[in-house]
Length: 481
Figure 1 (cartoon, rainbow, N blue to C red):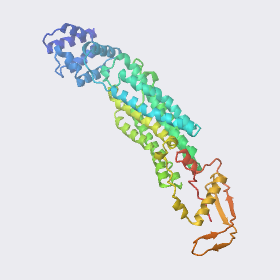
Figure 2: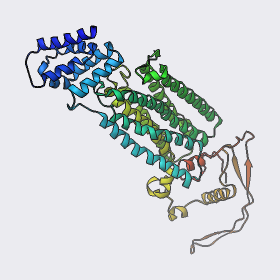
Figure 3: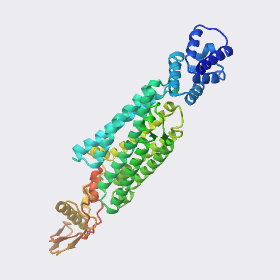
Figure 4: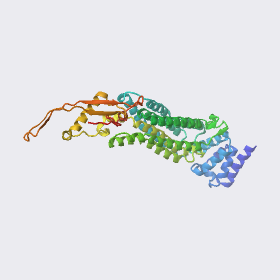
């Protein structure tokens, strides 16, 4: 009885307020009578405010965003799920069918395709470098491979969402598409947490492999423990943001409890920015101890600073997160959130890979990427002092004999032995000095008793990062001639 009265009042109110006749008015009246009472009441409340004539309801309502938003919000708050579906179906299929509606999903599609076209080739270059240049895959490579596997469906999800409602206003989304939209959006949130944090863990594993200092390794273990704890905590928070879990995408299941997803998102973004800054800053102290040329030092600083790009994208994304989870028009307002979430996560993967593909560029484009200093000219070599020449020869012999694998604490004492010979000086006519010498050079290798097992020299760091160095970058040896 109440439903019949509600429908009658709506039609009567419309006819009284908007008198006139038009072709098809009888059909429109039948359509309006099929509305549930709660949605008819919402329409009767807001249509007069918008000055919509009953004879021109299609043109007035279907092109007025504010009006549709107010009616839709009223329906969501006062009607049950079944009535909401009926009202939305009638509006889309009967009243507003054929009227062009704004759509922002194209931006999400373009962003997904473009960022994927940049990211996956760079990942491929990383593994080409590992397989054909360095000849080995390490733990940091395997973690990036896991992130890559997760990125494949995460690239397709925004495209699917865009073709089924993402970028439309909520009142234009077909009711049958809503559960799938919500379910895929839920899955994409889980992928986001994993893809965002796995590249950071990969970079920490890279640091652990190339920096052998015990103190630094302890810092890395602490950072990795934090990263694991942070990832698991936010993964659980996102996965169980609503209880029962099915209630997130199934409108017929009552939500017993839902956390404030906006607050969780803000904390996650803040922690992510903090972690990016820490990861960028970690190797600074270690790099200060390397005896590098300016060019190599700048190359290292640039490679480790690549993480700043991911940090910048996190900050930009945080701007679009304001109001996340609070708007009923989520399919419209979340477009930028989806775009920048993808940019942030994929940029993190790119930054983690760029540090590892430099050896490939060194091999095939040495003129651009090589950091080796130019060799001295023959005249410069000829003008070198006798002591410098002997020092150079000693260093060359040491490299040949010991493979340039000296520890940081090693000291080399070159004792000058017996120097005997006859020196004959001729007159100024030949201007020649003939020196006959006999040198006995002794090497004494003193290794510290606290030698670290499995430690590496800084030339390994240079080789790993593609600096093309075979010199001992961290050689604090004392060479006395």
